[in-house]
Length: 245
Length: 191
Image 1 (tube, one colour):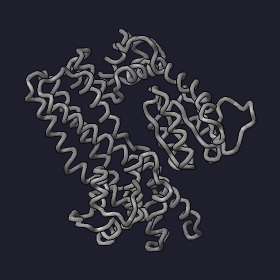
Image 2 (tube, chains in turn yellow, red; image 1 turned 60 degrees about the vertical axis):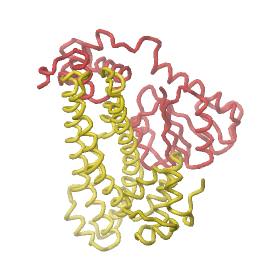
Image 3 (cartoon, chains in turn cyan, green; image 1 turned 180 degrees about the vertical axis):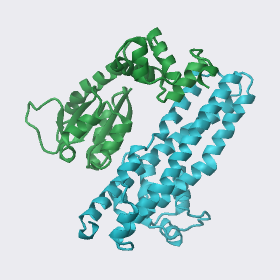
Image 4 (spheres, helix red, strand yellow; image 1 turned 120 degrees about the horizontal axis):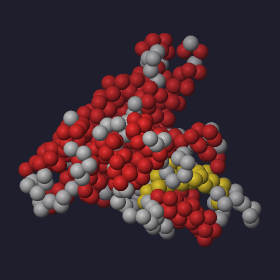
């Protein structure tokens, strides 16, 4: 199906429920009634092209609108990524944590194994939070200021003084792979744990991991293929300006 | 299973390549990029066995850089935007080639990559691999393990790759969990 601005927002969601993630991350409120995508976006002050590109990508994974997304103002994407973080921290991670803790009460799983999984996941949460904190406290503000410097809302001197030690390469130096451990957890649960009788709970836990892993992959694509190239472009542009040195 | 990264700017060509690749059951994962931007980051974490890249995009990335990011066993295939002469190199195909001709060119690469990754031996860990895994789980570095077992660091790395492939577990903490569940080490050993 062709997704376009005049179609009804509710029809779009019915057509592909995964697009709810985009709606949530752009903080578009529900209660669409019969409004078109265009109208809903306008009412929420979201650029309709930006929304459509993300929705189309969710609908056709093989066609990532890289260049179009790079061409938008970076703060749109930063807001999107920030809202994704909130969703992980406030909802997805605590929910999985709770489910893992329940493993302890499952009698067929040896106490030690349950304790081990809990420990592994707690370690992961710590790493996950540090990763997100670093982006929220350092990388995102840097990107937003860089955009301001490019637009002239901040002088090149101010920018240079504030970030004399930082560039996007610094961020990449300790940019850890968040999906890896999620896939490891999946393998361990699926292949190496003794089969539990409470299949429902166990299956649900695996599905949660699957969903988070998939979502993190999308998140990484947006960071690596849109945010970072965009920042590199802006860094190069700012350096070219005579006032920078 | 074989992992492939396609870097091609044309939507139609990308779709065509994906369509051809879907004929091969060996292929587990296809990632797609529409420009050279971000190629380095994707290569680093995705580690494809085969990179299919349009020559005009490949020319935007320094050769050494590309080589440095690909593992020794990965192969590069170039997509050419013009027609190719009859006996062109094996690692190139043209957008004007027929489906059969492109399939023929890709097949040896895909089968080759499939074989390297999945030898006919069992997926059980060998005693040697178990020993290496035990040491990894105990928190030892590749260098420490090499010294301890009187082997080269290179051998340790190669064992670790095999362990990860067989178990589907990449991270050290994941391997530690496996080692404890399977009694290779005890919970107390790691605290």
